[in-house]
Image (tube, rainbow, N blue to C red):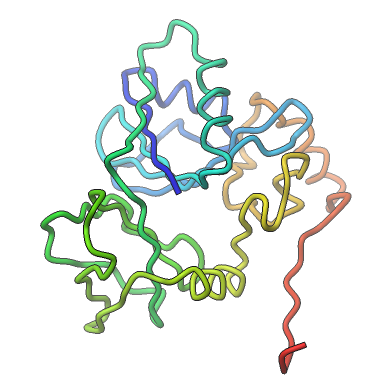
Length: 219
């Protein structure tokens, strides 16, 4: 995972114009996932986003979509009052716990709790300074929880329906086909790919659909 932010007086209007999410009335501290799509509705990049302060939005994105998403943002950026910043000194940390409804709290220090919400089901994401030890001293509901290994992360994210690029979908996948509708604001229009999303919504189905298969025992 990698991080970037969009900062400036025109940031909300810019994101409203080019992304699948609604940024008309952003609330500080709120998290909103969003996607940048092609004109044909394919996913350029899907971002886990938050709004930490006025005129600033931060995003975590899978590394396989990082460069092409930033390239698309630069392509859409003209004379707006904003800057797109990379954050190589920060690292998103995936955590897991058995209680998805509680609130993350911690001892501060080198950990920055800019992401205070659920990513998907039992899976959480926070952001910390690069170089910190993998075990993060956090508590949720009185129980300490730790950074997830790759296997544990995949278990929780698959169980909660969180697909990843390259593993679960490719560059020609539509956002509604892979279960990422939480990154789409269906009450807005006029963004790249919006007509395709609206058409699939009106029909009530996408040409393809990613599904989770549950088994009672190992195959």
